[in-house]
Length: 247
Length: 300
Image 1 (tube, chains in turn orange, brown):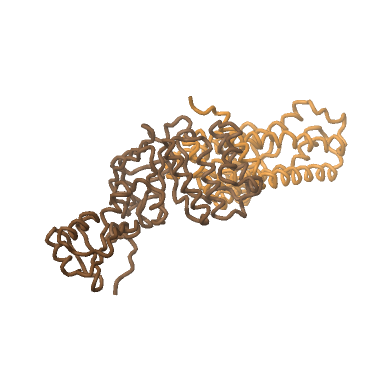
Image 2: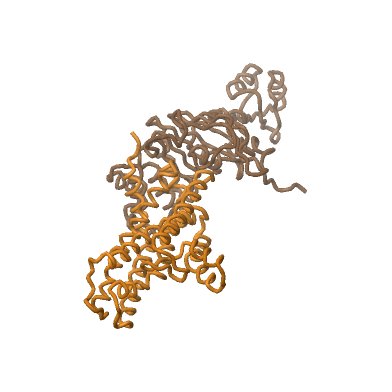
């Protein structure tokens, strides 16, 4: 009888929670995104509609998701940096199983953190922003940006794990991750023309509510599809390399 | 049991392991010797499925390592004692390993006690000495109570007390019927620990034999007699090779100690000393690897 998958999941969760970098990233993420949301709400004062007011408080996610990139990348690359990967691949020699367990743990952790954080940001709008008719928190137009944030966080986690498995180096994977989601999209905004806009839309730019942060905007369905495709692509590449390379 | 069949591993142009065929049997400690770069670690990594062989096959307990259902229950491995996240506590490190193979939690406490790390189990591993890391590595290898142990240089960095402890542990594990493969470059240590030797040089098999064979091959007899030159002639007539060591002593090769005594008795010659001198493993090993060492200093 082989080892049940939940045992591997539990082991990966112990890995994630037993190192300090996870808790630094968690604290920083909550603090930066939360503080940015409340500051933005305090600064705006009034908004014409509820979804606009809530969208304003989510501004911190643009930069905050970079912390999730670091968290996800470290979950993989710290194993290679320290040599723990040797031990992990000896105890769980079915490599895709190992990567899958790690990916699920990281993605669920990112999603859960965001599921706590996004409503806290929205609360800032309720408390601080004047909106005609108030802010009904259970309206679909308010819930959707929050839900998108949770989904995007999970996908960013998957992307980060994929990049980590592909590059095996913390500096390389964090650098590439940041370039993809944070640096290249605004750089493209400096160029005019259809090609720059198309390229910008096809990069996995971080999403704030329904808008791409620092990138050409596109409908949320397309935005999530783009980041999803990048996450799956990076993950598959990492998985293939993990199978083919010597540990 | 570990079966290695025509194993070859090449890295670009360098051959790390060259057509190696060896069977590591249970119930004894097999010492895995060779100079640096002779392919010991590469072979062990191939056994554990970490490195893919260029050609040839390796099986553990009859199947490739990657196909073992609960690997830690079958094979315990120590490849690199420093291969772990320094920011984790020793306990958390073992917990990660135990959970990954669904092993019962009490095994963690069992192995921590076995290797004597109770007092530092809940400290971060950052400050651990090499000796402590080796003990922790052994703890990890034994977590699943495995049938096979693959240990790369487990004695390295241990203090004398630790070395004695490790020697006893390996002996006990082999006596319980397990397969124990231990690599080392500390020849003197292997001499006291291993029953069987596998010696590599530049990736090729140089010896696969009982420890006593390798030592016996390089044994000599020292005999002291006031009639040394007469004795030398008598011994050479009996087919031995005798060499003077001073005026009254001889080094004799080709006859064992009782045969030398008998020759002296039958020739009516007096003997003041008769000793069998076993070559140290170090000497035997050097004799084997002399031509093979990859990094011999140039002789002027």
